[in-house]
View 1 (cartoon, one colour):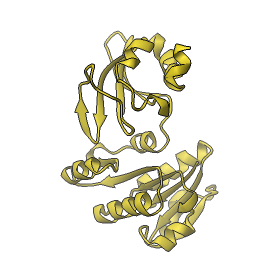
View 2 (tube, one colour):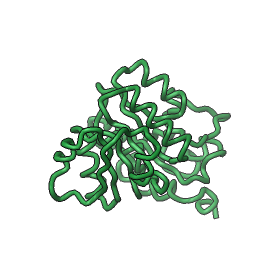
View 3 (cartoon, helix red, strand yellow):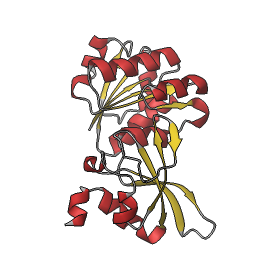
View 4 (cartoon, rainbow, N blue to C red):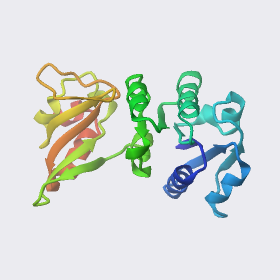
Length: 222
């Protein structure tokens, strides 16, 4: 993947380092040239000095070939504007914006741009939006055997009944998050693109559930 990051502060520089260590190419934008010192001498990605919502600056950072974009500067307005430009002007598939005001974060979440307010912010949460894969444990019972996990399905699961997951895997769907709102599904709920799926699963079954969801449901039924 090629990932463009706006903002080379503590979060942006940490995110760049983690993405590069995971084998992804990274470009990072900041208005202050000195900010790039946080990246250290080993950083091999692209550094672009400029305003992160300027289209020419974004092109210089490789936005036209980017698979993901993260706006993590210290300004809400700049972050959401840059996120919208990346999504709407350059059709970047995975976009996430850091928002300091939790109330505003909820509004933008409803517009379809994943946002995380500062009080909840971690690098891990950004990575979960940019490069989702496998599962992420959100809760574990006292015995350690039962997990609440966020799972990432193959695209062919979208448009199908959510309870098909219960039918074809040893997991049970606890709830889904749609446009920032939690929903307890029933037999009429259809999985939509962008939904976050949260399942209850025994620890020993986690890998099996990941493997089933990673392929089309037709493959599991055949």
